Amino acid sequence: MQMSKIAKAQLLKHQMQYFENARIEHDLHTVWCIDEVTDITAKAAIKLEGKTVVYETIHPDAQSEDLLSDLVSGGNLTTVTYTETVKGDTWLSLWKAANQLILKSGTHHSYIEDFTMNDDGELELTTGS
Image (cartoon, rainbow, N blue to C red; front, side, top):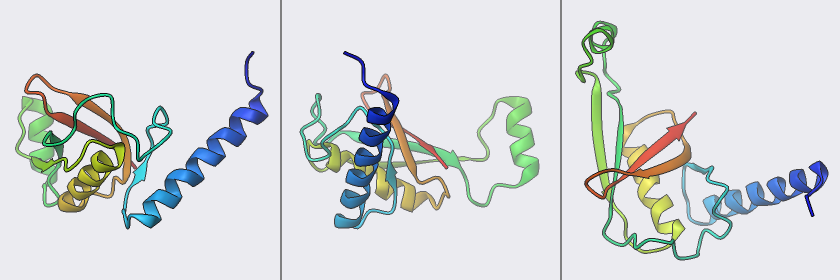
């Protein structure tokens, strides 16, 4: 049986409130937007403890000339990479690591949207505004 649009909207609203409460309770400054996770305190499907989370973003002091040069040449004069180690096996542990990366980077992007495992076994963080 399919859920009605109203039921889906109510579920989404409940889920958003759940993550907002968790954000406040754990003093996080970011927003968890991975809706496949329904229990932030649950263990993840993979071992997270000790995994490195990587976040690449544009350097806060990047100049427009360098950005243009990167676009033309495919270079990375304007990017900076931050890393953080996950301290636990729950989704919350992963959120905390991502939160630290976003704070370190000084970016305005605060929405945690995805993690992708790279060839080195690191988890690459994807954010949104």
